[in-house]
Image 1 (cartoon, helix red, strand yellow):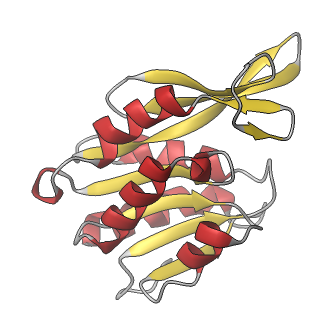
Image 2: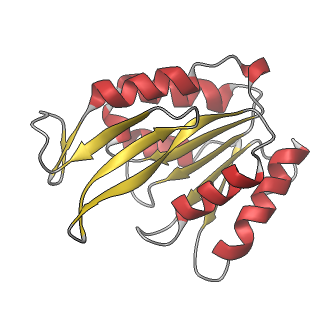
Length: 177
């Protein structure tokens, strides 16, 4: 459970540990609140991961990254679609603080940080009075490291021992803000 005085919680851990699953379970538990943000999910083809999709909490979707993308913005084998992603970021993270109970961001990672619009929006919501629940890459410099070191952030590592109870704890924490 996050410390009572903390406003922003970041979930971290290795790929596949359950960060996005925890985020999606928290979203389900907080369906009666005014949430803004997005989550990501893998795009799979014949059992292989070929990309990632960003899904805004208002239903807008875009392919964030794909192996077949011709985008000049690359992370590993993936081309990153900054235009489509930034449309979701602007629609979700630009909402006024008095119209949002919790901002949800999945994830603050290398692909997302290629976008200046994203970096500025994340900084703005972390600085706002509204609580932020986000996932963050376990490793990374630059903006990822800056976010992880903020004094108003608590970083929680997701693992098999805590991932099943985290959703309920984080939903309770969000409601207490």
